[in-house]
Length: 111
Image (cartoon, rainbow, N blue to C red; front, side):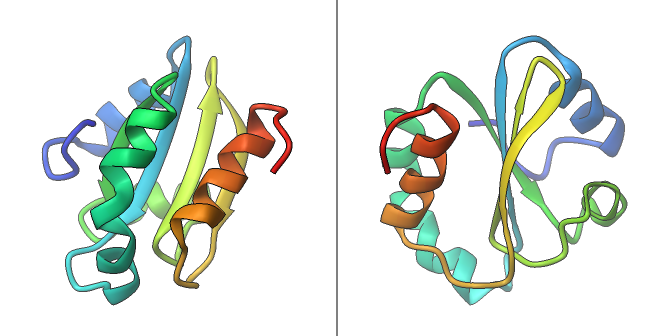
């Protein structure tokens, strides 16, 4: 996982444009729904290690989030070889099962 506080908008742009799979996890320190999912994120990231996981502080990177149309958090946006392949982006609380189901659909696996 790449820490959320260490990346500029330009660095985030570079990360999503590279080859391979990247999963952006948009969050914020004040967000209770983000705090709800954070304890299981290490297990999710380990299970889906084909992705480079990048935690993005939505508030610290508001311009980047707006560019991608992400306002609700927690949200997930997946990229492969520089192209967006899916998103689970809204302001609702997300469970581990919902996040894994989203990723399984990206991978072509039954949810």
